[in-house]
Image (cartoon, rainbow, N blue to C red; front, side, top):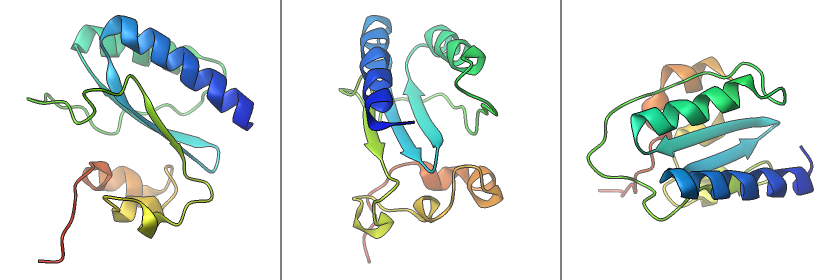
Length: 122
């Protein structure tokens, strides 16, 4: 996707998610997306259905689904980062999943690595 396409998609996501009380984040790398959605299950499933039937997408997978007590992105109707040209180590909360493509076997087998955590050296 071109930058203007990503901006248009992000604008649309933020509007729709705001109306549905959905929060989350969207990463773009090497032509692939990884998205975290937080909210009421029925609303999340509506969004997922819309995404999975959108002709711009293929191979849409749910890598992890879980009930949560608190949102990780409570004020983001859709946080976004294009990480095509980002040095992964420079990202706050760096985890090894940024070293792999979103479609790599390592990524899908180790989805817990995608969960944002601040790591310390202790």
